[in-house]
Figure: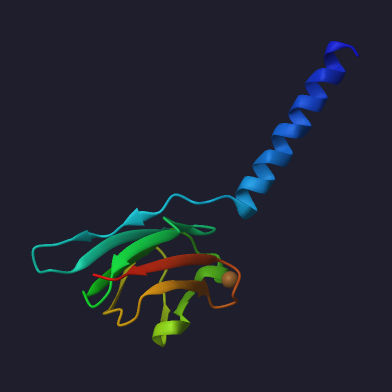
Length: 126
Ligand SMILES: [Cu+2]
C-alpha cells in the first residue's frame, strides 16, 4: 500500500464514523436554566435542525423554549410537540417562545411540520 491508499482508507473510515455519529450518535443534552420567575428557559436555534436538539427539563415546572429560526427554509416553518398538543409557526429570523408545563416524565420527540427535523425533550421527575 502506498501513502495515497492509506490516506484514502483512513479518510473513508473517518467519514463513515462521522455519518454514523450524525445519525445514531448520542447527542449532547442541555439542561434548561431556571429563571427568577421559576421558568425553565432555553434558547433553541433553528437552522437545518435544532440546536440544542436534546433538552432536559423537570416535570411540573413551567418551560419556555425560545425558538429562534435562523433561516427561511420552509422545512422548519412549523414546530410540533405532539405529546403536548403544541403546533406553532416559527417566523423566520424571529424568536418564538413556546410555553407549557410538562405534566408527564419521559422522552418526547418534537419535529418540524414535515416530521423531518427532530429534537428530543427529556422530562425528568422533579
Ligand atoms: Cu421539515
